[in-house]
Each structure stands twice: as C-alpha cells, then as structure tokens.
Amino acid sequence: MTQETPLLPQGAELRKPPTRTRVYLSLALALAVTLLPWDHDWRWLLPDFTLLLLLYWNVHAPRQAGLGAAFVLGLVTDVAQGMLLGLNALAYCAATFAVLLVRRRLANFAPLLQTPQIAPVLVGKEALVLALGMMIGRGEADWRWLAAGLCGAALWLPLNWAMERLAGHAAPPMAE
Image (cartoon, one colour):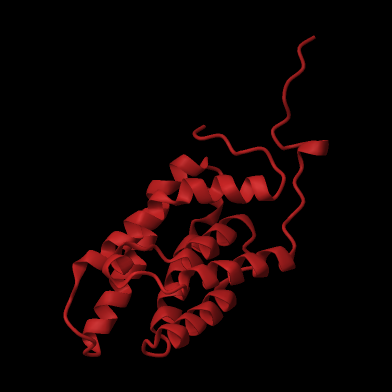
C-alpha cells in the first residue's frame, strides 16, 4: 500500500494565524522605517515599506489588515510626510483592494511567483500618487519615483522569507 499525501495540511503542518498584536506591531515598525529621514538624493529609490508589509498581511492575514488599516496607515503617512491629506490613504486603499481581489490566487503561489503579480500594484501606487500630485499642482512629474515600486517588488521575496522566519516557520519554497 502506498500512502498518499493529503491535499490539505494536517496536524503539525497547520499554521496558527498571526495575532492582531503581531500584525499591528509589524505595521508600526514598517511605518517607522518608512518615515526615517532618508537621504533626499536617494529617496526616490526607496520603496514604501509600510505598503509592502501591508500587502504581505493582506495576502497572509486579510482579516487583521484590510482596507481600514490601509486607510489609517495612509493618513498617518500623509500627515508625517506633509502631503495632501488622503493622497497616500487613497493609494494604500487602492493597492489593498487590488491585492484583496486576487488574494486567494496569490496565496497559492510561492513568493518568487508572487513577485511579478505584486510589482504592478506597487508601481501603480507610485503612479497614482504621482498623477494625483500633478493634478493638484504639487510640482512637475519626476518619473524616477516609479522606481520605488520596482525596488519594492525586488524586496517582496526577502520580506516573505523574513516574516516566515520571524514567525518560526520554515522558509517558504522559492518556486513551486
């Protein structure tokens, strides 16, 4: 008799969902890293760490970090960066909504295969902030800021690996 592997995880393979405290503390830490006084010459290359972690939690724990958390984090980012109130909040909510729409599909892929699906969301957030900023008259278009979305996509795999290791799980497979 051959023993077949079950379709769903069984026993010790089942993971406990992350606690609300862990999710909110990690989001607060990501917000603090985003708001650090980075060098202005390289600021355009810096990804939005808050959005990256928010999207991670949208895939892995959508009930703890949904649209409400995205809106609040966006407002805090707007206030801290001196931007038009609601600009980042709108962009965070749009990115969160897009990821929540395809969350089940993303959860079935390995992190390496999630990266090309998350990249348009991250670049789209930067493009939305840039376009809305131009519409309200906040300077001229500096298209270099779109590179921050691509840098964020490059950090998606290390972020997944680090979050899984911090949770005490084995590192996820690179590709399935």
